[in-house]
Image (spheres, rainbow, N blue to C red):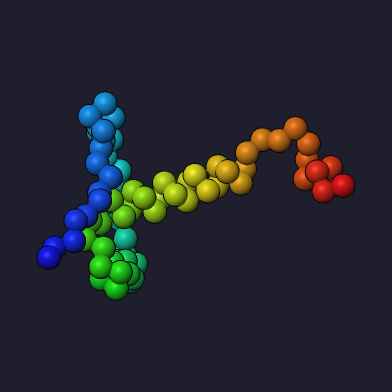
Length: 75
């Protein structure tokens, strides 16, 4: 019996229309290919998108503005 996959699809009201292109050297590409094959990831563009956006969201959470600086909050 084939597993049913749950993929996040682009919403009709939010189509993905902005291409992003970057280049990897041979060693970086081998690392990515090894990772994708080890974890059986078939959709490479989805993996790149989720990985990059999760990092961006994490950084934005860490850099949020606060009313007080870190030293004042630790008191």
